[in-house]
Image: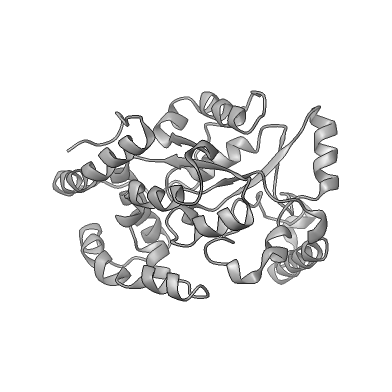
Amino acid sequence: MGMRDLLPEPLIEAGRAGFRLYGMATAGLRPDPDFLLIGAKRGGSTSFYYALLEHPRVVPLFPAAGLIPKSNHTKGVHFFDSNYGRGLRWYRSHLPSRLTRARAARRSGGPVVTGEGSPYYLHHPLAAERVAKDLPDARILLILRDPVERTFSHYRERVRSAAEPLDFEAALEAEKQRTEGEEERLVTDPAYSSYAHEHQSYVAQSEYARCLRRWFEHVPLSRFHILTSEEFYKDPQKACDGAAAFLGLPSAPLPSAGRVWNPAPKSDMTDAVRARLAEHFAPHNAELERMLGRTFPDWTAP
């Protein structure tokens, strides 16, 4: 155990605040991100993002892991969903500086990219419009998971966090009441944030076609690279090579690409609930296939 691991939590928090103030003071020296990983929540986005960070030409956000004790690399800023009111200077305070990027480019022997991964962007009703306005050239990465499995994993993650007292079927039944009117309020009041819309929308966040329809109104499909978590975990290196090529990078060996981050506790879903969810998602999946011109044979079928 190093000295940094022995520091008291208040001192660590003060360090985080200091880095953020420094980042804001130097925001003008921090270029916009090259890419955004917009979701899906519980779709493997954390594992995918950290796999990409192993590429020598992908630069982490600021501050990088190691500068703050007990911290991994920052993954998501949640600016275009929950923190938009903080302003672009605050957002850019999380990005590596031109000097950091230049040093990384010299070390790696070529141009570098940086980006952040905030999985609520896919579902938030204003994120796409905000991204189109503020980052018109950013490329968009998206990893999708079998919607039945994503829905159940989302629920299990809430249980693990001691934030969901209901059983799975009851939580599904409560979703409509919990989230009713929340999306409309998010649109009419940009300063509003909704716990229910972000954390209790188990089914809604798996209706990918509906979410992407809004994104495609503001960002062309040509700026998207979309894969599935099933493809990623089957062959992490191949999946990351495809994303790297989309970002204009060569392939590179990523030895820890198969690591699973933030796994939810294991439990079983009843066959009846699985069948009901599969039937619900079938038309949404069919529309998604039409939108993207591809199929999803690994996903649960009714």
